[in-house]
Image (cartoon, rainbow, N blue to C red; front, side):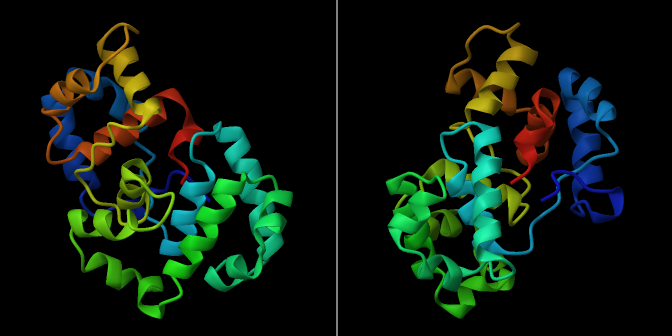
Length: 215
């Protein structure tokens, strides 16, 4: 999956958000022009987006990409709930997934067995809090995973994923000279970004590692 897109494919609010952020934040005033030809691209499949995020939980980006590639190869063109449901936990573990992640993927497949949940419009009809509540009922999906879904599948504009270590690292690097940063301090910095905290987070991720924005 691509992690950036040409201007024609970026979310409709992206230019407005960038203008706002460059006016309000001295760091983003410098960063955004550096990566101004890139932007977030929302995904097409809610199921694929969610399971890719689950696969990447708490492991390196490189390992996450490797495991995802194995899963895609195993499913072929049928990367849907039916394919994942056909694998046993043992077969998923043979691809390199932990036992817990194998269980989480199978639970996600069960959740998405309802056809309406595979329809992007169904998700778009729910607000952020409702999406979070729905996803967090799936075993293995917590706040961070649900926020990544809000950002990378639904393209919601004002998500601040304070559980994301890469974002905290970027805030530490750019705003605190590399000193450790608390969630409280990160939230204070982010006040200037509302209502476009997703966009600010995306550029901060991008400034540290291109691969960090590819869910």
